[in-house]
Length: 200
Image (cartoon, rainbow, N blue to C red; front, side, top):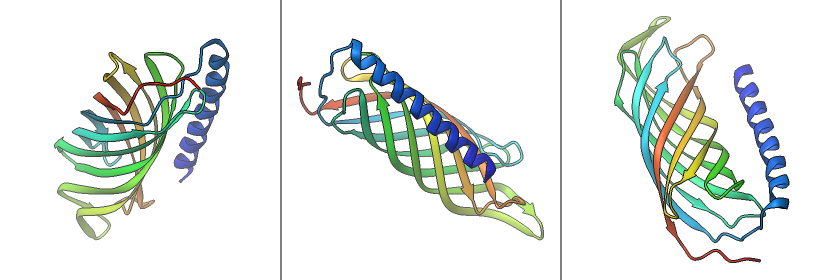
């Protein structure tokens, strides 16, 4: 739990610093109101499961609904799922998460963001995992996932995404009953525009 609180504190600090940078940047750049925008993304993820050195190579896909921005801050509703393509030698994790993302529109091409997602996850123990007097084969639990990353626009519709997530999984075969997994993702983004930008 101490690690989880530390990550939340760092995520809050990152959001505060990014917000301050956005406030300074808006003074130098003209502000435009961006309409709602739907996007989809898909890519690959490296997963460190947090249990006995477990690793997965996974597929991650999802969708975003970007809401109208306020100055250079844009709220986004995000849903994403991760599925293990290579289950590793210890355990494999799959999850479906949703939550809020905040984009910082600091430039035309690069948009850093912070997010907080939550949902459900399933851990499959490949050969059974002995802990105490029990052998664990499968556990399903809630997942909390703060993270940060950036989108880099290639065109009006295409972008690349790079981000990292730090996930808290409960109901795990560990002394604390929890595990903390780390996920790095690289993905391609396609945006469906709802309309043109309009100046306020």
